[in-house]
Length: 97
Image (cartoon, rainbow, N blue to C red; front, side):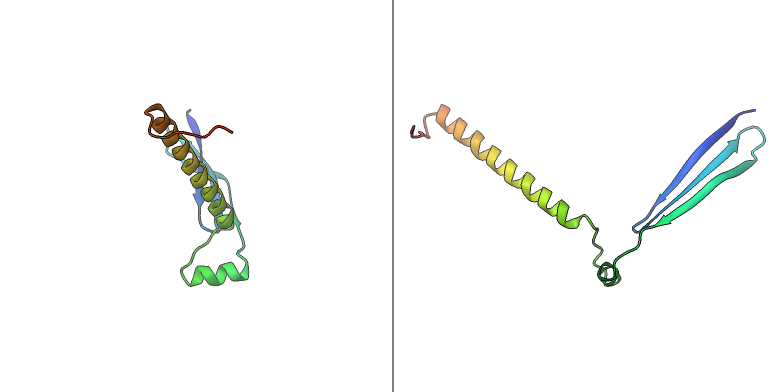
């Protein structure tokens, strides 16, 4: 008798649902072992924004700051690489202090 267990997940904007199901391949009789859900409550201001169509996550500000750091880091890398190439081709001379 072959039994297979499957975990199903439903990841939503403000909730997570799950179910653990046992599948019997020989008899095609399946049964639910366990299931549940977790609702992530929205703050009143987040709910208002969501209802207006402006869905915002709790990590939005953190993500924006991380993106700004990455952008700045890449900008500096490009400038360093450009200066290096220009120096090798005698187009850019740095002053030594």
